[in-house]
Image (tube, rainbow, N blue to C red; front, side, top):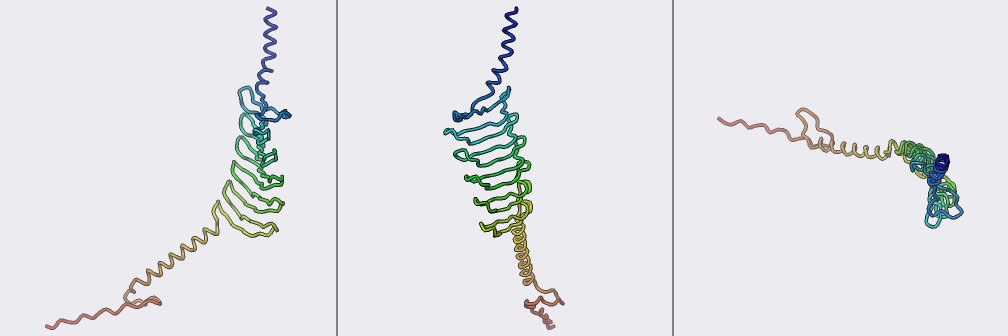
Length: 218
């Protein structure tokens, strides 16, 4: 009986260690010096930072998980494992800061996500660091004044948007449509005969007087 109890205790002590060991695995294609382990919990859900490599052993993706869902900073990498972009997630949805980099390491674009959509002013840069564009969004729609600059910092273009619509383009289209309607109205007015006792519109030819009927001789 005592031997049985000792064996049972040993099994109970060793089994959790075995389960924990099985929940860790070295990332596929990870170089030999890489000590990181991708972890899952007892029901197979991804937990913590997971790293992914290409067949050459280069780090290409790094993702933070909580209960198998992206939560935290997700990173993508250029060849030779140079950082390409960083995106914040909350419960599987893009939420927070986004930064895109040039291969050189300087910032290419940055902005914020809200509920998975671009929100607020996003800024794009030339590789030398000068601002190339400032583009405001409202929950994924272009909203506000978009500004474009040249490398000398001179503003070369502006476009105003409202709920994703180019305000100036809409106004120009409406003005053109109103102009066509007014022209059509004038054209129809020129064709219509003037009512008796009214003065013909300027530029129009008055209708000929009505013929006087000749009385029949008896």
